[in-house]
Image (cartoon, rainbow, N blue to C red; front, side):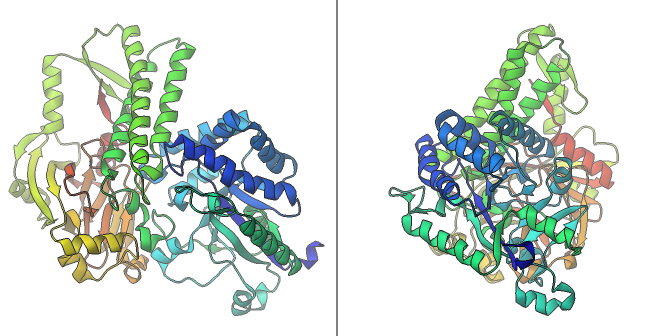
Length: 618
């Protein structure tokens, strides 16, 4: 079909996830043979069609080990025929928003190395597991050659309400395709200046495992479906007949740029995922419980502690020359196992027990590898067995502690017992409210030395929480599997939230976003339309920092207990807090926070010292 006859483009994004049931290797084989193979065979058979396919490096390596013939087909489609655009943004299907920028950088590096090993090269489209995205990803996209990101319409609607359809958005030289497409009716609404703009529709945007198969990968009977294959074939044939060309996401952007179509500026957004009203963005994976064996905070904190061990190993290794290949390999394997442990499926959607254990297992493997590097480096540095060593991951230094030094470290980490009255005298009233805490203990301590430019207190919050009524448990289950938002009366009287909230002192959202831990965003609540959807938004806070106004900040200690859950920002009641929704009845919570007041830069530095580049005792 000549280019001038093209009415528009039909785009399809098939998202495949080898960790669909993370840790169940038998399910990996089912997915590869009964879900992914039908996709490959469809496009091998019909060379006139194109599509974008998201697949992570861990899946590619699995194919390389067990299914070389299928990998050859993928290479044929991507590299030779140019029929499939390979979308690949991380090694593991991570909840990358929950971790610092360094982790995503490592994931991209490992992923690119894996693709190159098997003769593959990714395209310029960015689409991550669960469509996780945040503004902090934009600089990384530019740095690593990603050109366009797909943003789910629910994500955009959560932050900005119902936006009029436009072909695409742009921010800082990166382009964004919103879900929903751009139709002839949209062109008519915008006027004659858009007559020359090709339409675009999304004929698939979701789990590739379901596109050509029957049933669920979780259940028996999952496998190729001839009915679905024929239905998809008919769809694409009809698209071509009606003037729509199946194409890559990046190709549509190229066409818009070639035609001189100006993008709209991307409106303000924060961190999130697809299906925001139902999932609560990252909250589903960081504090929102559906099943009694879920352990969101425990898993995310465990992996954060392991991350600290890997950074400590790197720091000690930087003082040793030369480093043998087996030690370098052990460090690389530590990162690979950590990235697998950071997978989203162990804490979100409806994780089965094997997925929960998978993250602990992979995190344990990562920690063992890091500890082997630490032990070797200690020996090379002449550090006596049993000696306590404090590793400063930011300064890239270490200190062998004597008994006095160790006591000082414990003193600095635990602080001197203080009181809430003292804290509020120095930082102002917090007016915190506890939610459904059945057995709890709140304690306050003051570090012996506050960081320069800050007043700091530690707050420890240990409790066991459980639904207070049978009715609230039933309502909680219904709520967690349907629309997230309920009336404020439900939140106050029937909810299963367990934790605390603190009123905002200013009508602003002040926080460090994911992958951008050296900065703080400072938005008026009015910059968003959150109150029109669920009235709340949720931020992962990898560096732990969120502000309540008046120069006062809360820093969650992501390496302590099970503290690493998402922060809740309630824009209707003007409060921030840390709330677990419907947690298992007997789950113990051990949280630690710093409450600090002072300069913004000092607060950022302190948050990163605690979480991003910690001091680690080895």
